[in-house]
Image (cartoon, rainbow, N blue to C red; front, side, top):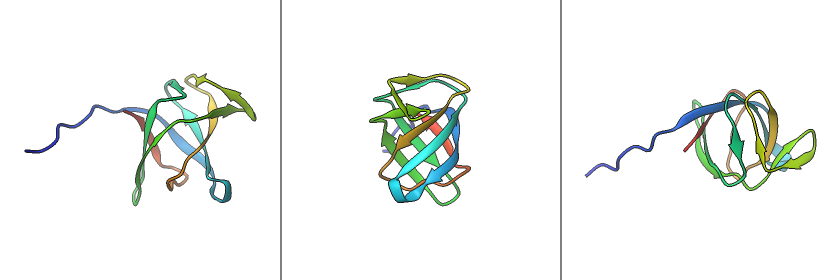
Length: 87
């Protein structure tokens, strides 16, 4: 029996990637918080990550709102332009 799909909401798009340190910058269209599970989806990638930390302007924050650009460390691979969904 197929697994039911979990509803996901688009929350942003990867605007920049710092591959060497495993950090992505995401321009948010919805709010996110530390502890949320995000799904990074691109043409060749499909990665889920639980947010362990968020930064705005190099300062740790516990949540971020629509319009913010946030940095987050991820262990998987993402690329600029990947869409980001919240599970």
